[in-house]
Length: 346
Image 1: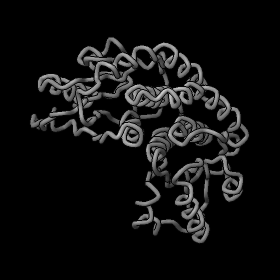
Image 2: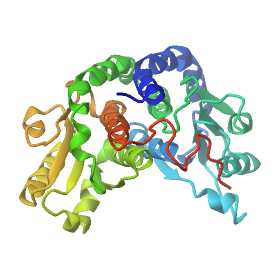
Image 3: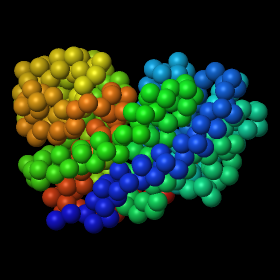
Image 4: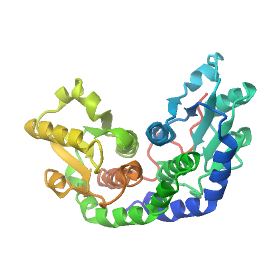
């Protein structure tokens, strides 16, 4: 049994990301050229899933473009009407629908202050897109399931593509162009594991942990679990988790760990050892067979992907896990109760 709409949209991700890369590469190159020398840092306005994509931007622009990335506080612009000084900023709005008034208000104020603005959205006709100086359309097509999947990974792809062009980095761009193949491989590899999630049907809470480029993944996977299954899923970096929350882990407590190969692998591996001592129930996303062997539910991903691109595949186990667990719990994964596709906050 599968969720027809959500399952289809999860499996469309290789196709829509390929379309995005093929359709917008030239546009993004022109945007990067137009923005050259016009800003010193990036301010991103976003909510929900798009806010998690913004966390990825903090790492990719910081690591490869030497740019500080700040997350906007939209309430200062909308509710309080006390916007900060945006001098030297490139202001970016990320939104699947482009509808939320508080996100639009950040870009509107940026234009009033004479700052360049960019919209990353799936709706070119939206208020956000109409407000911005530049637009990167996501090409995710209609996303009918309430839980965002393909609009998240296309947002990551758009940010990665912009990073490559801002840096003039053709080598990384060539790596990025291969990502649809890795996404398809990941979806294929995960099918046996996803059929075993019924074990977790009765859990009430869990932790999701990642670090570095996959700090964003921890937040997005936790969000998918919460909105699809009603399970309380708390995201942490492995560093923050050690500063107190690890005390909540008792024998059998479920912990999802995002551990692709990269600079943070030793830190995450050390945390696995500590969680073993606490007899946690670990669900590990990794290509490392030794780590997967420690997982009660191994969630494999392909080897060979550069760490900066791994968030586009490490989120897939979370999407599939949340969908399948919702079905096992008798819930509607396409239309979770109490949620709507377009959420407009002010």
